[in-house]
Image 1 (tube, rainbow, N blue to C red):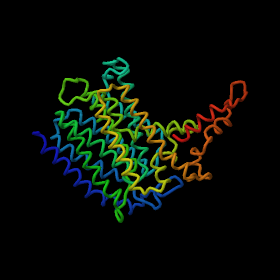
Image 2 (tube, rainbow, N blue to C red):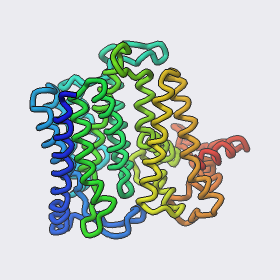
Image 3 (cartoon, helix red, strand yellow):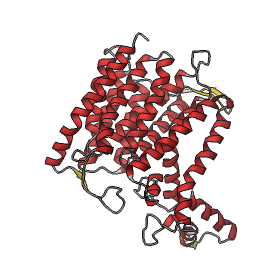
Image 4 (tube, rainbow, N blue to C red):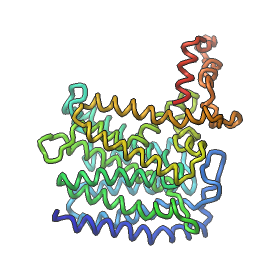
Length: 402
């Protein structure tokens, strides 16, 4: 409790700077014509300034540095190095556009800074499949994979007003609250500084009229990087189950806290691969796009997803002692049902536009027909198609709904 004043100061500094900085960024974006122009897959209808991530970045760095007094978190210098790298990568992508592969290379470099310099990595699987402590090589591979997945998950969910910011605040509050009550005040300050930095932006992003702005990749890449660090530390701090407020099955609990960004990213990647597209190809298969198809406003869709994610977190913590495999099974089954629900209502209400390539996947049998007609070139120049069959077609019809 002795660090509570630092925690409160960090939050107030972050939200104050963010609320002050966002209008400045908006005016600069307007003057330089740095706008996000709507296209066939945009949820927005009018040009909106991007670069809201600048305000998030500045307020977080300032508030967290002041709150941590500069020396309470030795790895902070490397955390900031990785965040600064992703900030400038996002900034360049928002202004000039970068290819997905160049962004991936930058993410790998940032991951290297986090793993090898900050020494933030997974060292234990918490008994998953009977495995406890793991060696350096699997530790590095697993950590790189988790960081890349989380960064891209937060990048991809920035599709409607307030969603990425709202879910990021929710996750940072949950993790930050646990860090605080368990005595990890340094990461509590880091998490709450992030909450304050996002909160100022969230107000303008969701409720702004004259001052409307998107965070862009400048913000989403920074959020994803910080959230991956927070998730790794949360799991590492819970290795010793004798510590106060230790969380059992922390890998599954982490997944439950981030259920929407992670599950939606995995689902969309599977859909794109089934369509023989790059997993980084933009489309309208995200859950929030389907809620918009059902007539939800941006605000209603955002609060619906945040509300469901919040309600999902409660049983995840309550069932933590069930074991990692059992808890993950619960998350997958319940989460899968929730993700199928919007597509089901789109079907029964006949809201699919057959001439919209982004909605074709929702048509019964579309994936089956796509695979059936797709020919593979063999080395001997022979071609074959996917075998037909009632069972296969039924399977893909169900997969389309998901």
